[in-house]
Length: 260
Image (cartoon, rainbow, N blue to C red):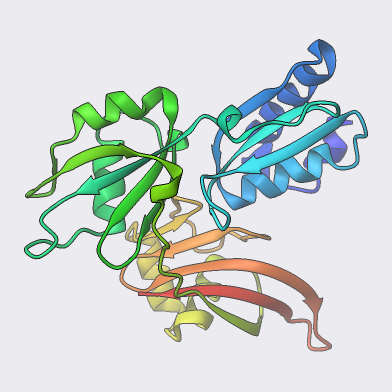
């Protein structure tokens, strides 16, 4: 049974598939809910696929706000309807001298990870142009707030906020329909950012590309539905939809692109 599941996903995703299978089994055997850490869009796609049409289980997702990219999954028996508090997501705001300093997503994320807390405990980092906020597993919120006093050379203060204080993040994603000869990372980057395959390969091998927030060094790695590529200095790409192949055997793709 599990081998049949594996064939629909990448070999690198097997450990996550095994974890999800265990969560599902736990819910079915003990008839109790299971709350995951924050998941990226690709992981959400996998968990949605594995739970599928299981009539005895329900899947709920929440990342702090409606268009959240990273979400926690709540797997539960069909009779259970979770409340927002059940997702245990806290909101924090970073206070800094706005007129004299600039923060960036990468600097904030790097500082958060430097506390020793794994990426899976953090949700989205959002900005309205000036203010910065981030979502975090409530079990780590107090610890992280007390650990951080600076981001780079900028003195900051992290405060917990309520959900009525959520800023409206700037969404500069563009949506592009196009065709590519393959789903290789170097091919996708070359096509979207209009650079040569060789240049794309150099960026990947230099460690300047991340796949779902993890460094990827293989130009020939093939990406799939809802994967997110982050290319330092260029921006981000998400595979929103795979529409199939053209008569010339090219992939027809709907991309979400966030240009730097």
